[in-house]
Amino acid sequence: MQDQAASLRRLVENKKDSAAAKLGNEEAAAAASVSASASSKSTASPLGKESARIIAVTSGKGGVGKSNLTVNLALAFLAEGKEVLVIDADLGMANVDVLLGTSSKYNLLHLLDEDVVLDDVILKGPYGLRYISGGSGMEQAGDFTPTERNLLEKKLTGCGEMADVILIDTGAGIGRNVLDFILAADEVILVTTPEPTAMTDAYAVMKAYSMYAAKPNMRLVVNRVYDEAESLEVSEKLRKTAERFLHMEIRALGAIYEDRTMIQAVRQQKPILEAYPSALATQCIKAIARTILYGEKVHIKKGWKSFLQYFLDFTR
Image (cartoon, rainbow, N blue to C red):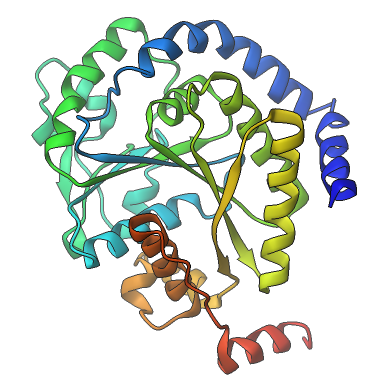
């Protein structure tokens, strides 16, 4: 495993053409402002009061299933009797709206309008899920100014009184706003897939997070795995790399098997927990939710149907 960890490290370090710009330039651009605010975030969270459990779901690159996991985790928490609020902080992408098949009049950035209050932007979506949209069809939001940050902090504070769990779907990568959200959260779920590019970008997030987090609390979900061995291999590579080079512990939270019904649910604009409650991916997400809430470790068996699906994929 040390050889695998070293290989992953070399993959990251050798990616000078593109990753160096991402890790070097973006970190350098964010470093001054993030480090200046990191100490204040260690004593107060802008996202709610202490009673709410604040979990940021993030990823190094887009397209790994981060938003899908966030929405479905929220439904799994609701099924366990928890009050949940989802904040779509992937600004301009409207991922939560798309996954739920909804559209929103207001989004998170409308809170920057003095006349808009928190209740205006909290939407009651399908399945009893409450969320704040990230907006759609607008230019990608840049870094918040100090005045905007203070206004958001003031207005979002009330979220802590509305939920047991606040799930924040961040943007992908290591931009300033992404780092702000994950540093402010109590817990961070980092989503990746077994693809080398996804793992490399996941390491970039781990590295940036380890530089500024006062008390790192990051766990890993490996999406779209074909078997348990693949999940363990990816988790171990990232865990050992983080331990060796970042001196940070990152634990595996769970894995989600490759499942065609996930794609079908996305096309139907329905969460897989509602569209296909008996699907393999559904069982995986429910198991992850129970691990988060109760510390349970649930082993998911793929079953005969999934075996055939996996087998037939390779016979095409």
